Length: 315
Image 1 (cartoon, rainbow, N blue to C red):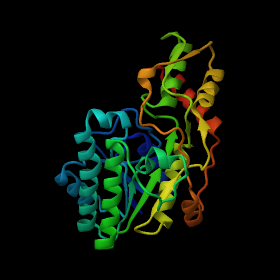
Image 2: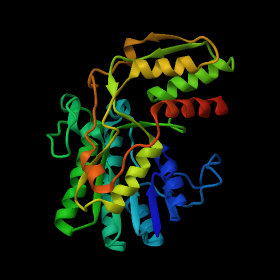
Image 3: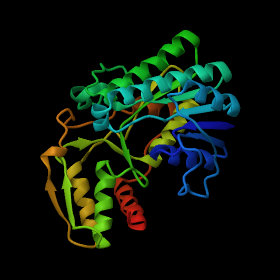
Image 4: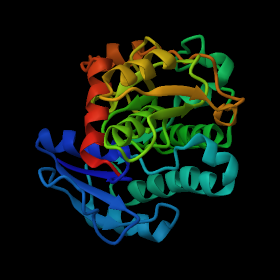
């Protein structure tokens, strides 16, 4: 079976490529660069094509050449604060990019199954605290969330109009080795690793740590993606998350306890986002009943692997 991953070199894309290759799939992917990154793991065989998903011609060319049986549409701008700085770029990438993928797949490989990665942010801060189901009200509160909801609804519209075999997932927070340090857990792990190496002061300056998040290991999350596309019902949407929360303060404390030098933690009010919910909790019932998926990696192992990843890099 031939798979195409848009956004191959993104955080989840790399882990998804490894997982699909381990299943014996032929894996192809798109990248905005002309060649694969130098740090691509050599044990994950992939074919790549340069592609900007905001360019319709690029997308049509790649899907026409690869002719995949499965398409995992991961390419997006996923940093919420950036969506306030560049809302037009975020909307163009996340919405127009989705339109191009759906149209190109419908024309070149109409029987292909397509996975659209939406976001739990579509539910909005108030609903996020109530463990919303997939049919709960959606009240997006950021340009990023608006872009994901628009893509989400577009995919469902294409299913209704064209019977396109699209499955949508709404993942909750996920982390692990390889995540960009602008996010809370890899950011803390990177600074701890650099402090251990004497490259910066042993101090973490953090945003609001009194919030609770439903956080999965990215390796569990990409397994859910593959199962959702394989076993999910076309036209349906599935929440992806543990179904339980972790207090950010406790998670950061775990990282600090693993540090090899004393680390202090302080709060910077400038890093607090006013629109962020106090808690996000996933209801993954539909996904588990349909696919049998459940998380396998304990959160303490995720944090340990994340810290070890940055100890090896030290950049």
